[in-house]
Length: 485
Image: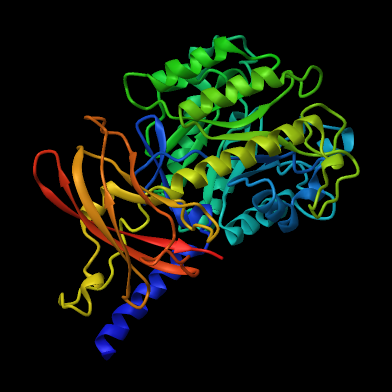
């Protein structure tokens, strides 16, 4: 084999190997942004739905010790969360008398360390794990201490401005106006000016990372905020619900916000519970499922409340749950079990969808002169965006991998499968019976055997071919199949 051909195939091997290694969420989606009413990946341009868990108030004795890397890793690995939320307690408005003296602005003590250091522990662990993290100013009265919030978020922006994992939540839940003003006036005169100040302070340092903005009435009036938005880019509005209390009427408000004519109605459920609004009492899993189906249908990200062993319905953990993760089924509450199952199921759906998406859209096998020896190593054509295979990686014991096409109907074509050394493995004919259906559909499959009917070995395989569309145009297609043991 010539050195040139060896180099080309070495590049192919490296590419194929990289595709067989599981990506982290941040590797997959990268920097997030807001486009209209959707959270999107700058890397792919497609909507992104984050799902995960919120930690409880950082100074609470029933929760603060869970602010550590072991728990973050367990949530990512076992629960399949792709985002966590560090809820830094700010004021003296929560908890026992001792805990009220521990908020960030009233003593800043959370057990044996500061609240801010606990936030850093979670944030740094999430970054190392490759998931997203929300740094939450967990306050009901943030507008009363604007200077403190501004200083805090300037520090966070300076530290994380080049870190795509980080999302800033600048106001957890604005309460109803203590002076009795209705929501539009409270937003216009109080919450929005505070939010604009903090957004401007962050944007002076960090122009990119997404900012979540709390909305009036404990982050329920997203329609009011979307109708009169804060100025700035990559902003989303917080929607909070507790399923036994907040039902169809609040989903209507969410829909109104998302459909707002100013196209600034992106929302983010940065907190919800499966129980009533007190965080305790009745659990309503039927309504919770209705909510999650609604959020899935609209690609709205969500974070559940909360990682805590407090004896209340919204807590995910029982008192026996270790502060190092590794929780067993009997250490999870009804809420914890339900949310873990939902996270795992959502992760599985996304992996299946991702596996059948084109994996080589932005990757090019080095261009070499087309000869008899190197016919398999032509560059991946742009038209491959229409062609994909799945599942990837495939188990060697799988029945087959399928080939998918998205675009105008094709009247036929052929695929040529090569191993990593450029040897021909098998030729496959494909066909399309879509009759004008332009959605992604299966057009053929490979049973993981070679031309002699033998099962192929584990490894990476290059798929190349040509299809002819109904209009008579020919298109080159390319992709990669990774076969496991």
